[in-house]
Length: 382
Image 1 (spheres, rainbow, N blue to C red):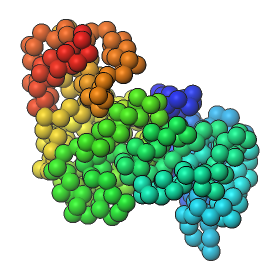
Image 2: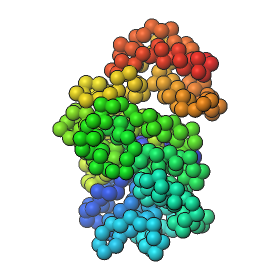
Image 3: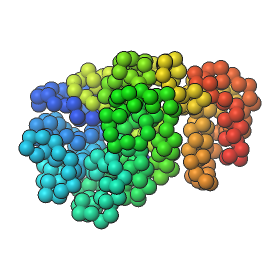
Image 4: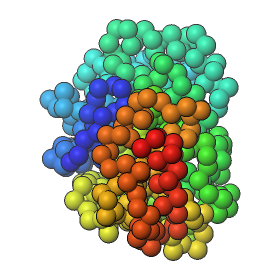
């Protein structure tokens, strides 16, 4: 298992994370999944589910292992009248969070998530000295919440969170289909004909800018919906009209700037094995780019997706990394010094490109690499 820094939190988390949403089996079945994840080196768990049974089963399975796990626990996800209710009412939020701690046999969560904010107006209301954010700050000051995060599907809200000094990381929906969808708080739009249309419109600039800003501010990203609810595995349901594999979906998410871990829904040990196979997968198995390039519906032509097909470069340039830093830099009026230093640390820079264009013949999306290298060399000055 490979581990990544989660933004500026100082936490190192496994690339493959455990999304507990689908873990609704018996205590024995839950323990089998936790044991499989533990053996594979998975060390981060997202628990937004408020129902007592799943909380208790997961908490009991982690008993004695607490210090080895990073727990992403949500504030605002409650259980009322035997059903999930998202709320900001502290009369419900407090006992629900205290219940989470009790059922996980712990007195803190590593990541205290402001649960599911998908409207900019709601974000502004919450952060404007609301009782809810007051409670979050209280927990942070007491060490009951070690780091403050926020979950959202909306890139506008995600950007607001990334720009807030109080939010250290976000749980955000990332996959190649969602990256083409305009900002919306209507989740159904991602899965109907609107999502299919978006697949022909190209990468949304606000999402590319979000990843760039998160990288620059040190705001870590953990990923939800990496498989698009499994729809990307089915050519009929996929907005691209072609099926991807779990490994390809994971590789896409993990090649976005600032992404540290993908929360995968584990319901049985086989799901763990399927996801952690990514850690030993070949480049061919990770190759989402060739699949998307041949899809009947896609708009990635001319866009670098950092897939690495262009390698190897005879001058040793990491072309995908150069393009990523260039895309990050162009989100600013002036290139940040920190970004410039990261670029220079690559060793071989864009200025060493000899425009042989061998890489361009290997690019599945027809990117004019030599022109990109010239532009990067001019921007960074080397």
